[in-house]
Amino acid sequence: MVISRYNMTRPNNNYRLVINRLMRVIFQLNGFFCIAVLGGILLMLVINSIAFFADIPPTTFLSTTEWQPEYGKYGILTLLTGTVLVTTGAMVIAVPLGIGTALYLSEYAHPLVKNVLKPAIEMLAAVPSVVN
Image (cartoon, rainbow, N blue to C red; front, side):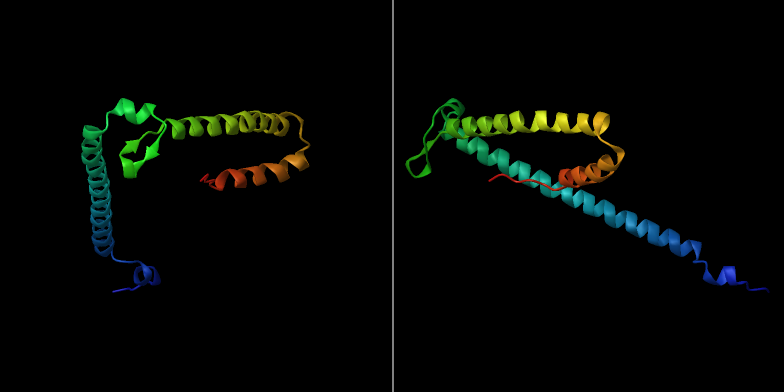
């Protein structure tokens, strides 16, 4: 019997199949667990929302401006208005700036400038921004 170097370093195919199946089962169990956790979170949100909206009508919740939980007053109109104003302001600044930058890079920028700015802009896009 001839033992070659190739046969000695090559892993057993049965071993690979067992490891493959084991990893597949582990990943599937992880996936099912994540789905179950998300389903539990959704279920709790729905149950608590139904209990909340049984006491506070949705129209009152959406149309009043007072937020005083200690007095039972829940209104998010001010919060919604502020969110819409901040989002609109950010878009007024970001959309023209983004389109202008894209046009400049694609049509007018010298190749050297383009090779420097494009990766920098892509890195900026990868950084998440959080507004509190």
